[in-house]
Length: 237
Ligand code: SAH
Image (cartoon, rainbow, N blue to C red; front, side, top):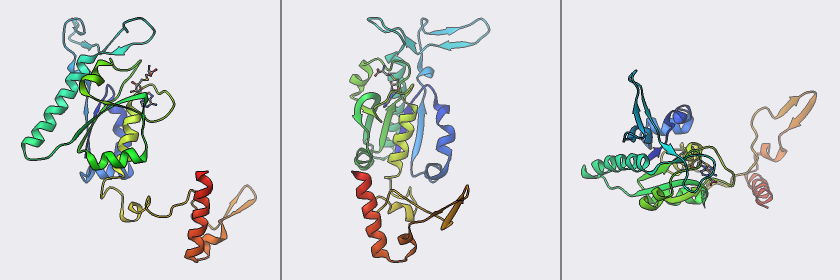
């Protein structure tokens, strides 16, 4: 699975993607996370300024038509960034790989992202292109031109689409065979509970003793399963 993130802030991903299960999945090439920064695709005198000292400023946003506060990410640098991704994918398909591409535009008013969504998408696609917006968002023509699906990770508004991209990568990666270890891979199919305990059996904290539910120490698998089932039913209510 190839995840392509269109973002102004690729460095924001560095530390998270290095750690733990996701870090291992990338090292073992079970998943790939690639970035394209719209800022690198800014052209034209109006938006790309070369200063006498040699510095270059590349402006990716502009004021919204119709007024209002905040800035809007311009369509062109984003479309060009996506084009560069499409070229990469085309190179792979030329070399014989099959590609099934999905474009996702993050938006707080999009379709809700769920584990179910992650499962289906992980089976269906080889490449997910994600548009991470900033400020007021991306010029709406981009999503239309790219036939992107608007996806929301929850009913709250964030300052950018970088966390949504990380959440999608994290959740989808779990669905890719070999990403979770043997033990973990069974997790979602297993009777899982919403409460977990580990050593010590009695936890002493500020003069009070906190015990683990005795059934978990009983070794009686049938009773343990029943206990977990009950816990799950309660948490689903
Ligand atoms: N003006 C927009 C909010 C923009 S938030 C509005 O009112 O709808 C800036 C960017 O953050 C968005 O373009 C999107 O990429 C991302 N974002 C914010 N909240 C999000 C959420 N709940 N789900 C997915 N993306 C979100």
